[in-house]
Image (cartoon, rainbow, N blue to C red):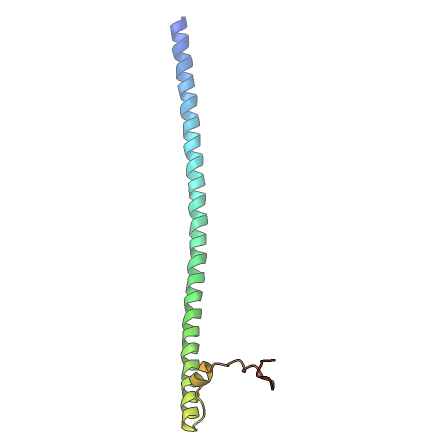
Length: 109
């Protein structure tokens, strides 16, 4: 073999090795992406389950809230019928600070 043929053979071998490394890299990337897809799919399933549970909890709380509001309104109606202060009135009363006591000289003590 002369030197040109030797260089050509080395170049071919180098190209084969480079192509092999490239295939291995692509295969590794593909495996990593496949693993990532599996992880994200599992995480997505977990999040969907959590979302479903939170939606159920929210509906339960909304129902409970409506029931409690109904009880409050019913109680308020009963209080108004018995001429007592309503819950709303009771909640809106403001407490005022007492006036300072004035002594015999007209000065606040």
